[in-house]
Image (cartoon, rainbow, N blue to C red; front, side, top):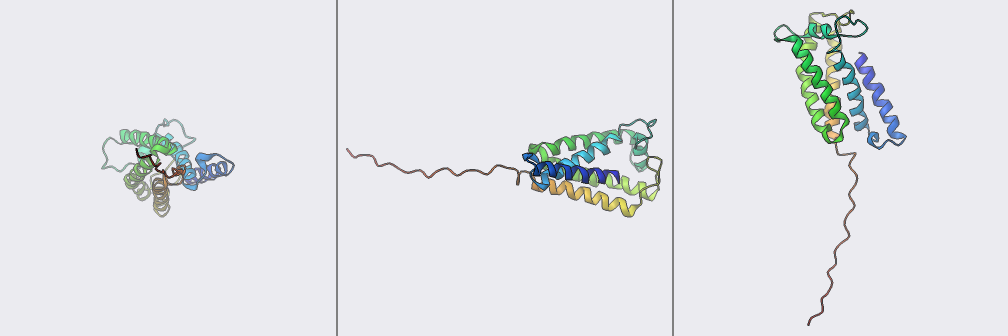
Length: 176
């Protein structure tokens, strides 16, 4: 749930900055890209936090979420953390925003089985109760929707309008 809070707050702060004149944050989709990037920095960090740290979710919490049929759970957690970080960087760069949004949507779909497993198996997270399935699925669907919305709108609202060239006129050449 803290990921959703970070997404919403970062989105609203980015949009406020856009309203105050920050051109790269002048649209809702661009601000959403930054909000999603902030959320991904938070969620990806848990993939690398040592088990001894208990102030936030850690690597062991993430490994516990991986369904038993997935081999090398620890390595998969590290790899997905790297992919989330790469996606966050891709979202803040306008040139890669579309590809990052689509790639993150695919990644989030692929991570859905881990969220379902964690809810059904009641895997505790950060020492607390497991997040119920009825909450996990809509949250994940919401993150996927934001990633796809950002990808769809990438480049459409932030491109500078082209100024048309003046029409060419042919000059008459003297006959001679």
